[in-house]
Each structure stands twice: as structure tokens, then as C-alpha cells.
Image (tube, rainbow, N blue to C red; front, side):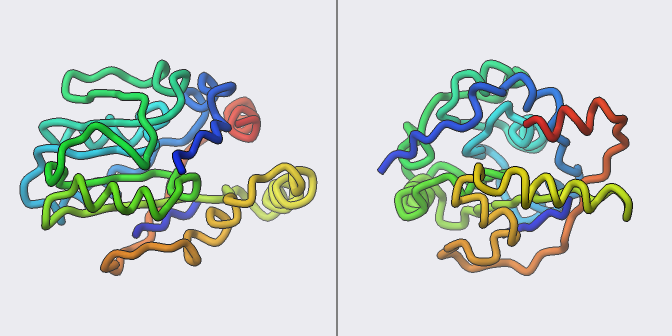
Length: 207
């Protein structure tokens, strides 16, 4: 499992703001994907689960022959960047049309906490090759400077306090308490560094 600083689940919280996600969500660092790929011997087929607008899928596609990218939100996928070796599909994390023992890498970026984990992990084991790898990561609050950070925390912890889904708590603690029944690899911490103006910051907060 990788941490980044910064039943068939049908609880779709993101379709209504798919365009904003595509425009304002930060990109994951290239070093993260280089690190993950270092553990993959035969990069033929990867499954990017909960792909959203395909941020991780497009990065992974530069390393893999094929990427199967799934999400339950048609609107999110409609904003994904098309690439010839990415197949986007509207499918739940817990039940896909992938064949048994065919996937070398499963990636889940900022989405693991939304899944029915028991069913998802069973699906991961079904579709993965014997030496397959699963990489899941998340990021929480941004850090800007001592003057701005308390405002961000107040917005997140107080103003929005009663609006967060209970699953959000796993993001806040960096997935430290989430069930992960696989042999874990000790990993470095990666950081997302962006240079934003006020418009980009506001757009991100609105998502």
C-alpha cells in the first residue's frame, strides 16, 4: 500500500462534479508510477479500479501494453483522456468482466475506501496472476503555508464536518486503519507538488 502526502457499491458521489474533477484534481507524481512498475515483471495488463477521469490509467498506460480502467460513474469516464491502449468500462470494483488470472497490476488511486472491501479483494485475487501486485494510495489535506493551512483545516474539519461520508475517515488517516489482506511492501512517501493560483485552489476545494 502506498500513502501520498498532500454488495456492489452504488454510492456515486462524483458524477455531478465530473468536469471539475477533470480540471482541478492534481496529477499524481511520475515517481510513484516508476516505483510501482519496478515490481512488475511483465507489464501486459493492468486494472485501474475506480479510475474516475483516468488520471492514473493514463500514466500506467505508458508502461503497460493494455490498461482496463473501471468506474461506476459514466460522467467521470466521459471526461477521461482516451488512449489507444486504455479500455474504459462502467463496472463496479466488486464485479468486473476481466478474465481469471490475467492481471499483473491492480491500481486504486484515492478510491479504495469507497469499495465493499471483502468483495473487491476477492475480485482482485480472482483476476490477478499469481505474482500480481495491488497498489492503493490516497492523499488528504493540502499544505500551503502557516497562514493558509489553518483556514483549510477549518473548512475541512468544521464547515464540512457533518457532510463527509464515514469512509472519508480512512483518507484522513492515510489508510492506516483500512483492511488490506495482502503482504505489504514498505514504501516511501510521495508528494504532489503543484503551483496554483487562487482559481485553481478554489476549483480544487469545490470538488
